[in-house]
Amino acid sequence: MAERALATHRRAKAAAEQIAKQTNTLLGPYESAMRSELVAESNRMEGYKSTTPGVRKLVQLKDELLHIEVQSFLEYVRDDPRLLEDLGLYRAYMIADEWAGSESRPREFELRSLHSLILADHAAAGRYKVAPNKIGGSAHVPVAPWDVPKSMGELCEWFRTGSGDPVLDAAVVHAWLTHIHPFDDGNGRMARLLANLALVQVSFPPLLLRSGSDRGQYLDALAASDEGDILPLYDLFANSLRRMVLAMEKPNFVQAKIRAELMDTSAKRYTLWKELLRNLLTSLEHKVARPHRWAISEMGIPSAEDFSDFEEGVSAGKRWLAKFKDSKGVPQWLLWVGYQSEEMSHLLGVEGRPRRWPSIFFAHRSTNPQKVHPWTTMYRADGSGRPNELTVVPGTRTAIALKVEDQLLEKDLVDGADFVAKTLCRDLPAA
Image 1 (cartoon, one colour):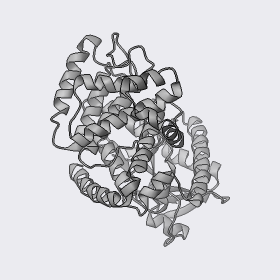
Image 2 (cartoon, rainbow, N blue to C red; image 1 turned 45 degrees about the horizontal axis):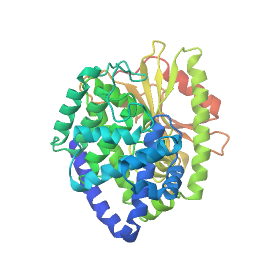
Image 3 (cartoon, rainbow, N blue to C red; image 1 turned 90 degrees about the horizontal axis):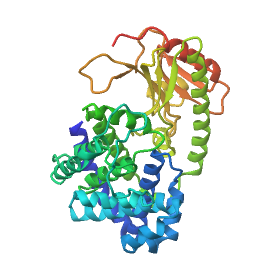
Image 4 (cartoon, one colour; image 1 turned 45 degrees about the vertical axis):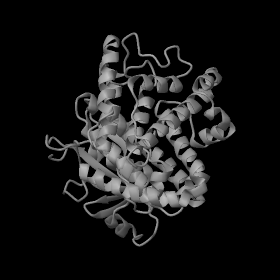
């Protein structure tokens, strides 16, 4: 994983040099577009209704406010939730970018100042918690309030030196801060900001974690880090960075970011595909519940940009879609989305086309203790009669295409969901 991250770093530097040539006088708008996207995704990760166009518009309208003295800025935004959620975090990213340019990393009191921007309307903004707190949906018990100052001091001391591996620094500072959970609120947004700082300082692209498609894998990785395993978070960060580098290497990347445009045809295809994918998940939920007593946990729907990459056959990493949990609540299957295989393209008769619908792949839980990830993807026929690839094809009567034992099965939505449920909710393959 470290070698792959190093290769991504080399490509990132080359892409950054190319972007610098493209930006010229457009550098300000480009940075604003990227920062707006980071803010919107980070806020949505916490359940807020931010949108990238909404943040951009607010930044344009309130540009002068973003450049006044911090205390005056806080007084202005404190009573307006919309300004607070979007502009407060945006201003925090501006300050972090300034630190990145100076190659310094924040001291402990500076972290609390950043927190005051993120959470300006909170009574404890910029202050550590005074009572024990919890992490929603997690069994982890954060550090006790009286131990927080010492723990944060140790974190900042380590962060100012780091490990020498920027991706590892980003993963560790993120995991460490969320493990401490020093604030009553805003811990996740602060952690993602610091992870970005560690990466941008050394010419990595921004760490853009998607609130939709990355959320499930992100939460799983954080849970693993609380148990002492940093590798899943490291791997997620490395894949996210690689995805961003691939986007940066595309022609006219800067102009596309500034205009916030996707091709109309791609956007329309994505809307149809996403709607059909959601219908498939709903149908699967019903099919696994009866008579199997299993359940589905949705992990996230790929974004429009992910979809565009997969259409073009770009290896932008796996987007986790859903987990199948058995009657005891144990996840046994992971469904993830990627670009369509050449074998499936051949079976569908679309090989050679520049754009193909993304595919869903099936990974079963592995019991091999040597594996970094507990999932083994079935890429090839194994004699079990289970599908090893599924393509959702909008606009056709048989909208579900399944590759089974290297043969193509075409079914409607309901029958396709029934087939998947019956074949997955039985004896598992050997791991």
